[in-house]
Length: 318
Image (tube, rainbow, N blue to C red; front, side, top):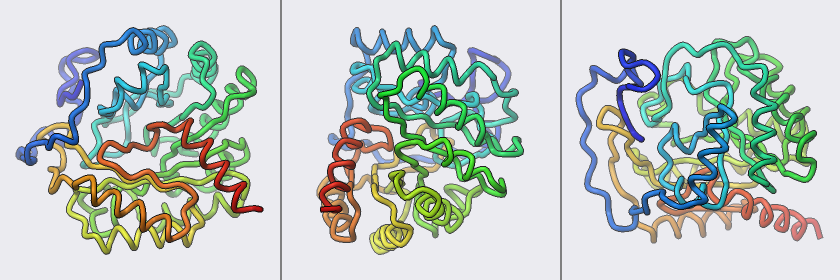
């Protein structure tokens, strides 16, 4: 799954052209708590077939998610819209980089059909960064949300968006489509942005999440970071404070895993007890929901977490 050269769609095109000439970065051996089972169940195969039949991409595959076997066995998939090629080149990410193709106007309907076939009660929609588009793909997100609403009225919708940096009015378009959960990941602490996420701006992302709450307070907001990239504990705690200042409801914290030796190295494997400590501290800071563990990912157990998130907000409102 994790390759540096794409030998399927174009045998001559590197998957990450900006990383090909970088020296290899060695990570320490994976500890026992990182191990996952290989995906080989009937449910996994069924999900894969539905994704393929509708010509869709998933972040589960493109980003090399370690939980793909568990999620796809339950027919839970995170759809990645607007193609499989990203205009950014983050040091941690395994999604292909380069100049993307034009948007597929039929994609929103194909996603909706796949959601219906999988019988999803809760769906997560993410995308590549599309800095080449005037609105960053905001209208495509909105069309996808509307198509799912039309085909599956009872399905709740969670979106994981790019930052829409320098795309005036884009956020308003997406929020107006009324997803149930608006997720935008910070990915790491501010001091690591220049090496880990150079195309983004930390405080722009914080402001994006804050603005969602200003535009529509009924929408749940969510964000996540990876640890093991060289951050310090006090920096993680500061990120929590920044997110709470933006009234973010849900925080996820997971272990960074190196996709290839050309990507940013794992600086440290954080043990499970430290994740438990982060979760405890985050709850004291006021988050409605926190998921912190080595294998936590933004979309992992998203449906169950959404139910708990609604219950937490209702309890706080009493």
